[in-house]
Image 1 (cartoon, rainbow, N blue to C red):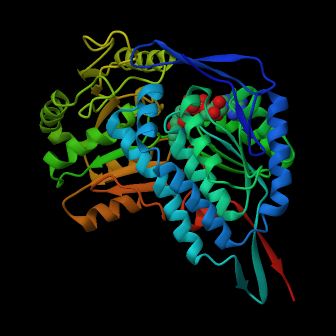
Image 2: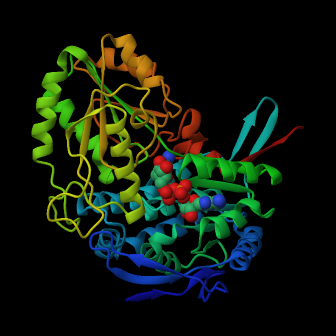
Image 3: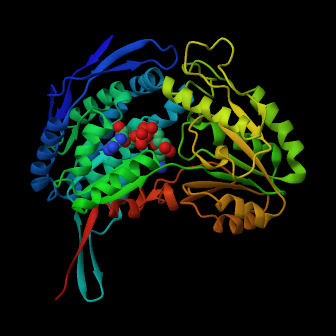
Length: 471
Ligand code: NAD
C-alpha cells in the first residue's frame, strides 16, 4: 500500500492542508494500491500565489533559458522510462502498447516545443506596429485520467515555452503517475513556483482554479460537461480558455478503399487506449452494399484482438479505469440493445476469466442509425457503431451530423478523393488513410469538442497575449 501525502508547491513537496483521502484501485484486479491525500481550496490558493510570484521573474527569462529548462525535464523523464510505463499500466490499466506510446509522446511534447522556440518570433511587425507576444500569466492546467502524464507534459511544456507559470490539477485517480512526473520536474531544477501540482477533486481544486482571479488562462482537457462548467466560471474573471473536450469521431470508409487494410485500422482507431480516447473513431461509416464484407473482416480482426492483462505485450484492450467507467460502458451497451441496434460482437458483461477487473467485451454494433444515443454520445469504452451510407454525400452528411468535431478518419485508394472528402468534414483533425500525430499541427475541436487549439504555433499563441506598440 502506497500513501501519497504530498503535493508540490513553490519548489517543495509539502503536506496539504486537506485531510480527505482517495483510494487508488488497480483496475485490472480491483485491489487497493494505495491512497492519496487530497488538497483543498486553501492548498490551491497557496499554489496559485506561488505561481503568481514566480511569474514576475519567469515571464522575463530568455528563450535560451526556457529551452534549457525544457531539456532538463526531458533528461529527467528519460531516466525513468520503465517506471513511467509500469505505473501507467498498474494505476490506470493502460496496455503496455499504449503506455509505451504515451511515454514516447511525453518526450515528443518537449522536443516539438523546443523546435518551435528555435524559430518562433515573439516580436512581430503588423501594419506599422511592433507586436510583442507576451506571456499570458498564471495558467491553470486541469486534466483527465486517460493519459495523464502526456497531458501534463504537453501543456506544461507549452506554458514554460511561453514564459508562463502553472498550477496543475491532475485527476485524483492518477496520483502515482503524478508523483513520478513531479519527481522528474523537481529534479529538473526550475525556479520555485514555476509549476505547482495539487492533487484533489474537480469540484474543490478545479473549481478554485476556475474561480481564482489570479489565474489568467485555463488549459483543460476533459469532458464537454465539465468544460462548460469551467468556461462559465472562467468568464467571470475573463480568463482565456483552451478546452479539449469529447468526441464521437466518424471513420468514413469510401467504396474504393482497401478494406483489408482500412477495417483493421478502423478497429485500432476505435479501441485505442481501450476505447478511452477522445479521438477514438467510434462511428464507422461503410458503403451499404459492402456491409457483409465489413462484418466478415471485423469478426476476423476481433477474433485476434486480445483483451486482458495490460502488462502483456500483446494485449490490445485493457480494463476500464474504474468500476464506475465499466458501469458507464455497460449502460451504453444496454442502451444500444434497447434502441434496436444489433450486437455483432461482444455485448454485456465481462469477458470469461477476467471477472475481477473492469474489463469490457470489445463490442461492435450493426444496424445503427446516426440518431441513436450510441451514435451520438461519447461512450469512452471499446464500443464501435457501424453505420451504412449509400452515397459519398450521405457519408459526409452523417459524419457531420454530430455535436462533436474533434477528429475524423477517411480511407480511400484515391488520395485526391480522400482529400476532397476530408476537406468537407467539420473536425479539428482528419486522418487520411492512417492514424498519426503531428505535434506541429493544431489539435482541438469544432463545435462542442472544444475551444481553441493545442500544439504548434497556434497552441503556443494560446499562452501569449499580443501587445501592439503603435508608433
Ligand atoms: P472530466 O471532465 O470528468 O474530468 C477532467 C478533469 O476535470 C479532472 O481533473 C476533474 O477532476 C476535473 N473537474 C471535474 N469537475 C470539475 C469542476 N467542476 N471544475 C473544475 N474541474 C473539474 O473527464 P474525465 O472523466 O477525467 O476524462 C474523460 C473525458 O475527457 C472524456 O469526455 C474525453 O473525451 C475527454 N478527453 C478529451 C481530450 C481532448 O484532447 N479533446 C483528451 C482526453 C480526454
